[in-house]
Amino acid sequence: MRLLSGLIAAALFVSPAFAQCGGGFNAFVKGLKSEAVQQGFDTETLNAFFKGVQQDGAVLKADRAQGVFQKPFIEFSRRLISQNRIDRGRAMSRKYDAVFDRIARDYGISRGVLLAFWAFETDYGAFQGDFNTRNALVTLAHDCRRPELFRPQIFAAIELYAQDNFDPARTTGAWAGEIGMVQMLPRDILENGVDGDGDGKVSLKTSAPDALMSGAKMLSGLGWQPGQPWLQEVTVPSEMDWSLSGPGKSRPVSEWQAMGVQARSGPLSNLPAALILPQGLKGPAFLAYPNFDVYFEWNQSFTYVLTAAYFGTRLEGAQIYDTGNPAQGLSGAQMKQLQSKLQARGHDVGKIDGILGAGTRAAVQAEQQRLGLPADAWPTVELLGRL
Image (cartoon, rainbow, N blue to C red; front, side, top):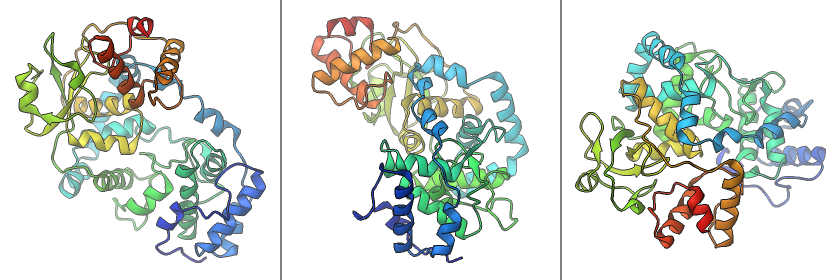
């Protein structure tokens, strides 16, 4: 087999000669092969890699059935964070203490961060997914919802196969093509795979040291700042300019303190931070430091990111967050209705999916300001009615 050398970046570019997505599945696979030949793979390698490739309807079903992300932060986090996961996380911290110490030394990443991902992605390696990875990636690349994300992963998987680190018939993982204990896509494995246990191989499915070290290297490459915090629970005053809150609206912590924002426990960092109110001014409140933004490079869901970031602090001793008494939110159907109304007013909320994502939050906050409501980005029945 011939190795592909230095051409992963080229895989991000799709030649106009090849269909990026859609059309007949067999013709699509033929196009993938032709493009791979142009990238330097030999025909023997490609025929072996694609032998028996099939569309997987279960993958498409899973891709379209992510209703859990419609749940608000309190409900979502309670669903993912159990006492069992906390206890097991602390036990894993002790078991792999030397690995986490090495990660802290080499990458400056606190153990709670990786323990939280390990817990949420695979329940500490117990449930890594049983979807055929090759079929999942080709299915998702053929589907025209997000081909730009999945098509390059196919060429990365081919290179892993050429390196004898991927079995197209037997390698399994999550429905979206992630592999191993912390669920990494093939391109991420190529770029960030680390032999953490020193056996000469990178085995993210069977070696916790390999998986944890690889995840740490990836986070570091995404911009994680060594030794810095990522999230801290705070209390907020009863009144302030709520439009200043939200992801991406960082300001010096001293300014937040001047407005009445205080740490619920421990000292505040002197780093810039954004005030996060996942369920509005009467719900939980957090200051998100620069490292928090790196989470969005791992997962795009605001609720998942906040939950993972909070769980990381919890595993390191933070107290259970104060739920407060947030205003009642919207049902899934009401959220879709709200998104339609916001879209009609010219706001970019993305897909009408009932999920309170970044675009919908920004639109809600803008309309709250226009209507003279507290602009905390938390949609309520009152706002829906006013619109």
